Picture 1 (cartoon, rainbow, N blue to C red):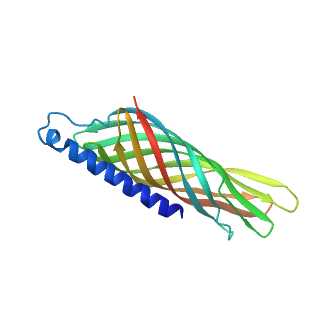
Picture 2: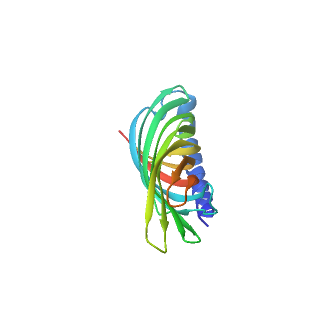
Picture 3: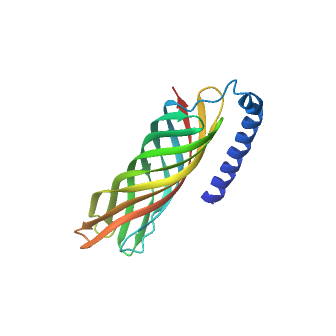
Length: 202
């Protein structure tokens, strides 16, 4: 269901971007004006997370949301920049007495893309960090470990009215294994995320 909603939202963004591009195509062709992606921005996002825990059958999933901020530089149609985000998530899953959850994570990534005036196609990759929490549901005893790892993905961003933009993005986040005393085993989490967001460009 979340993937269906994301696909519909992506299609809506594509239609919006097509209309925006069609409206701008003549002045863009004449090079009299064009949308600039350069500069700082900040915004928020909401999506769905689906993951799997290493050395466990648990597959935590749930709603994820947060904030992001970044800066772009533009050279012709090529856009380069950096972005950081901080997310909270209710993704969790249980196996036997063990409950795994990923309450929060963040990333620091580079971005590179190709702009077609008011439409930006981009890829992104960089560092990730966050917490994987383990709880014994019978005793209530829990254990959390801070994990580091990597993140990579791709997306589509479209200029809206004024300084606002909207985006649809896929991001994969991998938080490396740490040893847990409760299970005497190493666990980490890898998650796929589909998320929609809005940004305000300053």
